[in-house]
Structures are given as C-alpha cells and as structure tokens.
Amino acid sequence: MDTVVDVLAEAFHDDPVSAWVFPAGERRAVAQRIFHRAVLRGTLAAGGHVDVTGDLSAAVLWTPAGEEDPDGDAFTGLTGEEVGRLTALFEMMTEHAPGGEYHHAQFVGVRKNAQRRGIGARLLKHGLDRYGAVPAYLEASSAESAKLYRRLGFRDHGPAFAVEGGPPMRPMWREPSICL
Image (cartoon, rainbow, N blue to C red; front, side):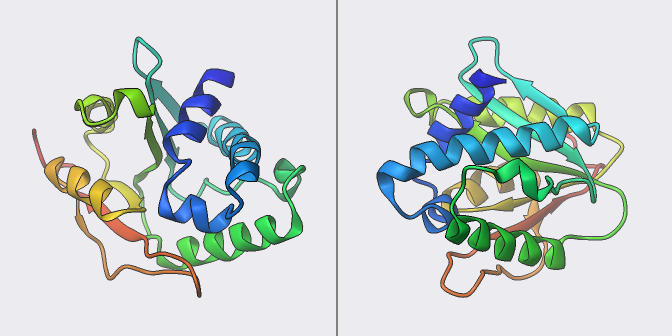
C-alpha cells in the first residue's frame, strides 16, 4: 500500500487538478499521501483492482462503476479547504459519470523518472485486456494524458468539465470491442 501511495503521490504532484485541490506546494506532498491512501482503500473496499508494474514504477486503480467514493473519515488530516475542493470535485465527477456498467480507471500514475517510456500505457492496457468485455471510463486531468488515452482507444465522452476556478477534466470512454 505504501508503495502505491508513493507512486501516485509522486506522479500527480504537478498534475493540474491535484495542484488546484492542494495548492500549497510543500503541503501538497503530505496531502497527496493522505488522499491517495484514502482512494486506494476505497478502491480495495469496493472490490476494485490495483495494477502495478514489476519494478513498482507505475500503478493503476480500477474501480467498478459507482463504487469510487471513499467515506469522509478517510480524509482525516486534510484541511477543511482541501476537503471542500475534493467534495466539489467528486460531486462534479459524479454528475458527469456515465450510467451503466463500466470499470473506472480512477488513477494512472507513473513515477517521474519512468515517465514517457510507455510504462503507463502498457499497464493501462493490461487492465483493459482484463476487463475486455466491459467498457472503461476515466477522466483525463491534462491534455497530455488525454493524448495517451486516445492512443489506447478512449474517446471523449462529452465536453470537458471543471469545478469553478479549477482546471478542466476530460471524461473519456472506451468501448469493449476495441482491440489493440
């Protein structure tokens, strides 16, 4: 668990959405660990999967549709402002989430020193292959990540959305019939 939390906290440290939720640079490192630990526990409690690379440089959290929300106590240690931004973000994400059955690739993270080598794409594809008969959904938090997801067969699933004052998130969907 600690390794997955470390990978995600490092991978998302400079992510636009993470920087908006946790704006203080020094505080962000602490808050990210609290946040990712809570989300990881929620993923496992919901019957989701965590995929990691053999060298532990990347991780993907997969959660069944509608099972993503960690309980409020999971964020003990975050400030009221941080929890407020997270709550607004989760509400917006829930509002834009598709209906029906799908698997949510909630976080796809690669350690900084391993990025841009195709590691995240291979790990994400591993999960897509496992869930081949079920559609996949995710929210791209940057234009760069959206490009990666499009290469793996994801398509825009409606317009980008954002919490007031926050950066855009791009909902993306992948039909199960796509073979790569």
